[in-house]
Figure 1 (cartoon, rainbow, N blue to C red):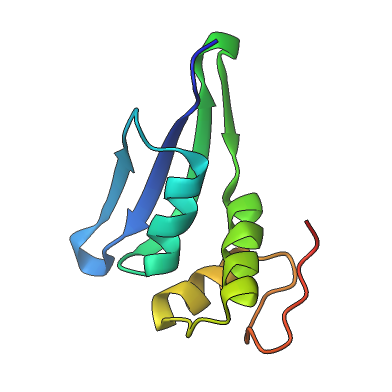
Figure 2 (figure 1 turned 60 degrees about the vertical axis):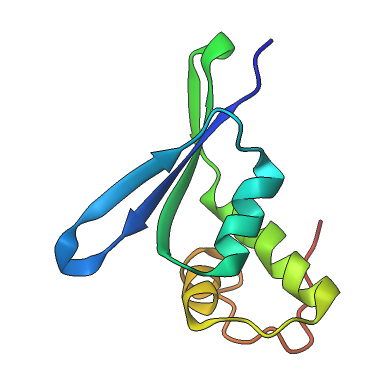
Length: 102
């Protein structure tokens, strides 16, 4: 079975959207890339070619990103807060006292 392929959709405003993926990117790499907050992430897809399956895992990734910041107590960038606000099931507006279910 091959590893899943992760595709990240990013919004560049008036310049449009971009889909980015890399065969070597792991789920942890996706979480880290979003946590760095360099782009406006719209959606994260997980493609499992062996199963001919594509799933929107944006909400799951938002949970993992929020947990990373809750665990590390790092300062959260504006881009990451927007991502969490838009995609976390609780609509996170602050990481203070964040309690994220695993």
